[in-house]
Image 1 (spheres, helix red, strand yellow):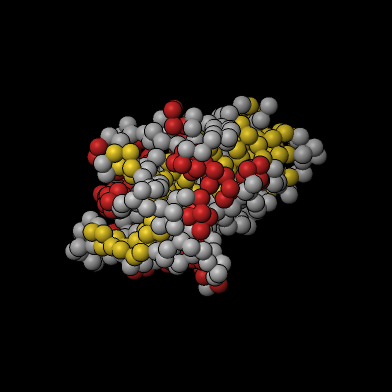
Image 2 (cartoon, rainbow, N blue to C red; image 1 turned 90 degrees about the horizontal axis):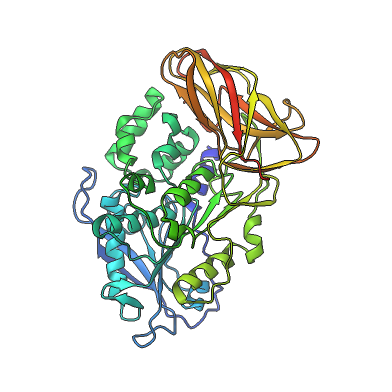
Length: 500
């Protein structure tokens, strides 16, 4: 119970990193609380009209004659908007207005959470932007078009993409001028159930954190998943449209600067989710104006089976004075017209598991290493680690392996990762992340490409980089192999992004 309570606290707090100002407060006016009409709810648990409630923070200097840009803000899953006087002082002092939103199903807003669905949360954000544009102290670039940015993490990052892409789908453009999403997703299906294998630990925590917000589809799907050990078809359909992956598949791209801040040790929305957003969801022009920072944190739980490691922190933001300073500078340059002093646009800054920072132009593999055959049991058994290369070396990016895969047993699953240690006996998984590979039926020598978690690690002299293969993972309990069996990988090659 204590573990679940801790998980729920992480889920609720994720992304709400805005500090409240001291009690002896400034001259900024108290926030104004309002509600706007959202999309009517269709779920049978709560059908009917929906209000989306917000708190509007106006900086003291803003007026009809001195209009300012606005930042939208929203909360993590299970949370609610920030409405206390004195909140967001660093943004207000910098000359931004802030509008903090209760997303549908949370706080004072009605309805059920459709989890970033463009037809629900996306349309809700559009209506909030309409309200922002109507405020007489907000700077605009045309009728109904405010100068607009967005901040927030986790679920508070997802709404940013939901709103911006929903506008593009409707009108071909978005009114957002810059986004700063933290620890959020590209594809919810790939995050919650990669290859249809459910991240049981996190999915259970998310479900328990907000029982009253769920739709009837999620309630039914969660129960079915526990019974069958699979990712129900209804859940796949429910989450399919709810993220940038859906819009990218439809040919849409964001053409505004984005600051992506993602946890390299995040094992709910892993680093590869932000890499997919950076590489696929932005136009080349937007990517050339965007920044990518990976750090060790986010939805970060330590893994025990197989054991993992990472040093917590944000080493790659240190050169900017910390993430808060970086975010404020990014927003000032793109919304306030501040001089452009930031550098490193279009590159990846990735914090290593050991506490350093690797900056690379590409996350693609640069070295291929052939390994001996690997045989792992399925469902029960111990992890094994196979040496890939000796240190010193640094890896930073998205590795994968290729192999001829054979299985005994139905719905065979194994878990893969890169690890570091002095030997196979003490190798630990880099940044606590594994990914599953699943073979639904009996397979004989099928050629497969198996994705490994995106990571950054510095392997010192005297240690080695390993491939870890495990029949079980504590991030996927109850969703290992469905029957006893084995998985054999032959003609195995690991493709690793080694930094030159």
